Length: 113
Image (cartoon, rainbow, N blue to C red; front, top):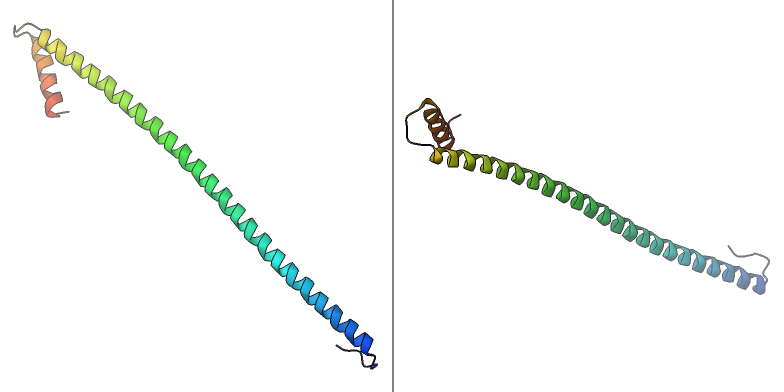
């Protein structure tokens, strides 16, 4: 848009204003793009940290469950060892109690419920 009054100075001023406007617009777009990239990177970093924290929490929970299961199996193994030790400490007389224990032990080792 050029002034039709024929004044060269006003045409130059209008062109200069358009150039300044275009330059400012370009700078604003560039700044806006940079800001968007920074915000996107910051959001990605926050998401990574959040996911890492969730994974660490889940891993801690799984470790706890694993430790609990190990404790349970160790207790069960200790009980089984005590039963076996009791079986071998019994005399060889064929009493009802000895027979029941031997039967129970054989069931344990053979997996019979």
